[in-house]
Image (cartoon, rainbow, N blue to C red; front, top):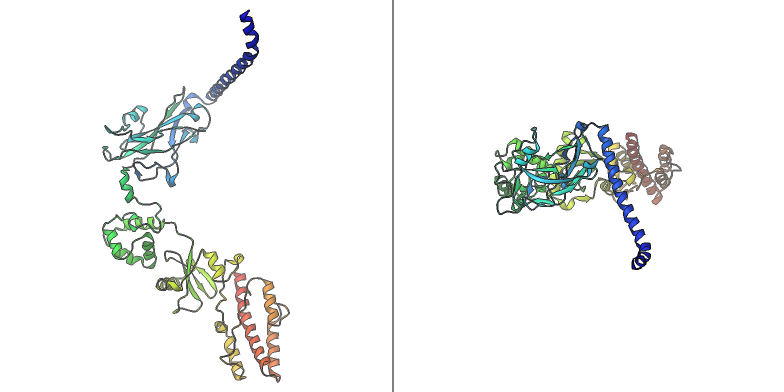
Length: 477
């Protein structure tokens, strides 16, 4: 009776639980069976001998490597390992091996990774920690493949490589799991030196920073002969080095002396040039040069171009004479930094210094200092001035500086300017306006009205000059 009572109360409770557990176990077993079945099908499609796979490091190590520092790939990325089918060169993203477990280990630096080595050769060349020391690799030495690709987690060396016979290490990776009918070859990196972390203080930066000390450049050792020579010449940072190179490369080469060979010089220069520069530009208009000529250069005194006659000419389009003139102007600019104008980038310089709208930053014109004297090249101002002097209406005190603003922007602005000049449309015949002015001049009119007509004619002439420049630029586009 007791058993019947227990069965009566427990059976309604236990039966659903048991059914659920059984169902889950059956589904799990069925899933494994189907996965195995899929693998068998793949084996039937691909012969067994084609399942010789291999591991491969997908990126290089970032060198140099220091103890206690995270082992990284190029540009600070994590080390990635792929499962490769050597017959196709593609990553194996399916099958049990594509999600297997990996193990990283250290191999002797003299191990020949390009030979036809075996797993036994690898085991015989694995480097173990020195007696009384911590394991050679610290952190997570295991990783899991995901669709045939594994990523190395935080891992670092606890000891340097100076005590080994080759004084170098190699990093290896192998499969922890084993699979029937599949042979997976280990992967080994190139050999590299592991330095003590105290040496990181003297590490070369790749790429260097503008404000890194100059000994951070390749082939220039801290407190070495080259470093001392540069310091005596007040070249203390990478920025100083690049600035002196762009101003006078031959002098910089002489400062370093004959002890630096041509090959060393190229390595140092290439490293310095890899420095990432900001986009700022600087403009200087030297008093000793033409009024409308200014030089544009970057933060390390490299000439970017010239502003000549209202137009920006990039450095690659300058003649040798113009380049020499531009470099001379930069040298003067560094001695007159208070007269240098700085902008965030070339577009900002075009928009502000040259007063060019953002939509027209390809070409710039500076109207800020435009005066009648700047039109002498067209042979118009001198003749008008002579006429004015003969008529007694021109004087040095007369206000003849009429600056047309925004004449280059669009047709509406040209129309506005034409209204100011007394023309109905921009396309009106300007010669008729001049003829009308001359006929008015022959009439008996004096005083302010006469003076205004002269001012008007100068404005017409100036407008003609600016309109000519705009038309030329549009044709060039």
